[in-house]
Length: 287
Image (cartoon, rainbow, N blue to C red; front, side, top):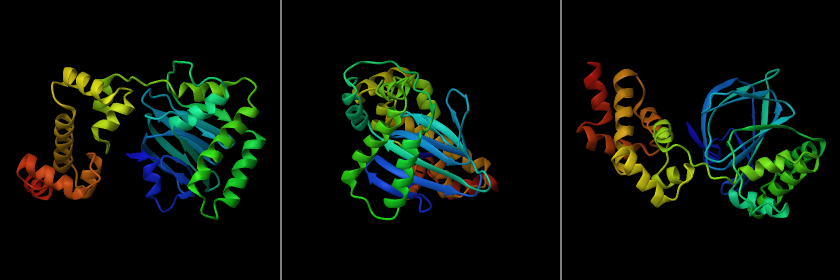
């Protein structure tokens, strides 16, 4: 599992066309089928499939296929599993990530920024139009070859949203962007049990669950009987212990699967929790 777009910044095989924090545009091209990619979105994402196909599976368990000439809009905080399916040995997609601030800028021009809205916060598929396809072509041909100034990112992202909307007389696209602003307010216990092993801190969990930090801490203690940080450590350590007992995984992979990106920190935490290093614990169970 990776938190995106941050994880894409660390992948040398993915082209970073434009980056300004979590507002960015990335380009991915591969000739290999890539299945079971676990992603947690830290920003809203618009994925445009240019070649091949993309399967998106969400918490609701309803898969959605996005084919060439289509795009899928996914809200911040969504946990999704994606399959990249090449066609004639090629899969290509461009992903536009944007935050609430940029979505609000767009909605202000539409007179919708201050209107409350409800949403099921599921992925929504759209068909691209000629204007938008030309925009993507120009983006890749120019900014894909030169380093773009971060100050241009919001301008190009807003341009993309306007170009999609310009060929959507139904207004459905703008409506779905509007729905991105609805607070998720997810069922806390299920959300935490599903995502405790993600490399997130307490503040991240609060934001992704649609709660203020103080409300999150209060509700969490009421439902779990522990402070969030204490509970997270306990759950992650138990998962790490189980992986070390059952699978011949490297310590670094166990750390990653348990929600730790900092290997030394994981080893120190594990040793403090079980009085053995991860390697010592694995050897004791396999002998």
